[in-house]
Image (cartoon, rainbow, N blue to C red; front, side, top):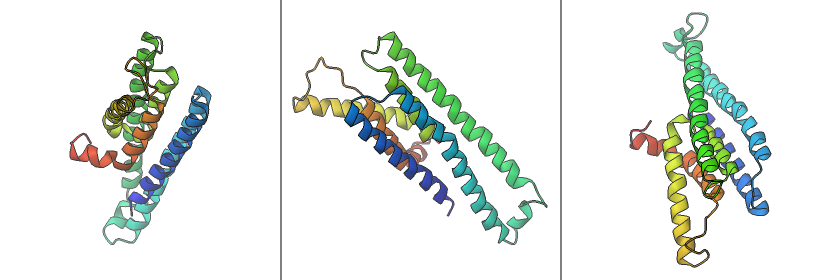
Length: 193
């Protein structure tokens, strides 16, 4: 029952990622303004996920003989749990997403956007926000794996030349979708979470 909120969150961002990928294929670019507008929805979806989780906890605990004593007015346990979850999980996600995004923006500027565009760095920041702090390693590694595999496939079927630089926006979207679908399982299996 508890995974309902996460599944809704994951499905929502998978659909948004697919829509952004469709826009990218149409226009061959994702504007920074569009990325900023989409990022505005992250706190709304994150706090909606939190609210649904806590409502599920509340009503499940309310019907339990032992757990109902952890609810107000007898205890502040649920509210303490909400504060810890909000401040630790979401704050950690924002900090790590900002750091990873900043690293990729610096890389894009250092190499004059030859290998990585600034908008792609913002997409990586967006992806880090969406997948959460515990999945950032899986997300970034999957970007590189998808990019290398895509480059090798396109090179082998001679769609690109060896000296060509491949835009990675598509691979960022694929990594977001992959990480939302299987990232938590991979993080758990590899002890990253």
